[in-house]
Length: 189
Image (cartoon, rainbow, N blue to C red; front, side, top):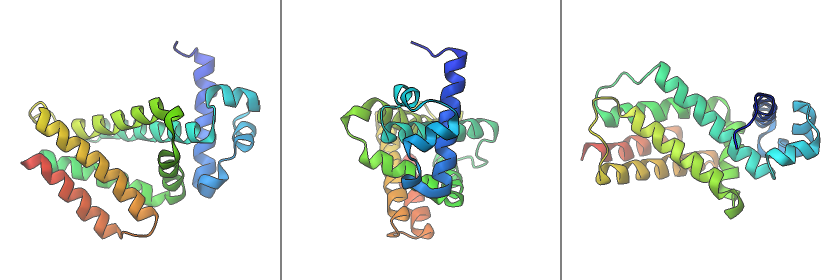
């Protein structure tokens, strides 16, 4: 059932509060009581929208991906080859996450900690990530067949793994960049 305008505004305030808290202090700073106070809703109301901190942070990631998708539509990648367009898009997103590492860490940790109860929300994040990748390929790219869709899934998985590796200090920015470009090269085959 779709949300009313008032419910959508409340949800928006909650997501904005979650984002602000995560930007300031990462995963640990996003406490449900603090989110409720910051967004001006009762704690019980917050739990009706998001049953757990993990649900909330996965929804925050979905929200951030939605903003990326909007930015992609407003300012599409300049490259012409689909692989280069996708790499440009994901690297643009990576640079944005570098500017907000606490937020990136909070969202990625939520994805890692998500159990089956958050399955639908995680699936939505995954679907949106794949949509961004396919849209980034550009209007001249052939409709993605089974091989291309497999490449898109590999790019999505590489993107998430590269973020985890970078956030945990196991990969440098240069390595993440190389991994993303290498994975995007699958679109050329």
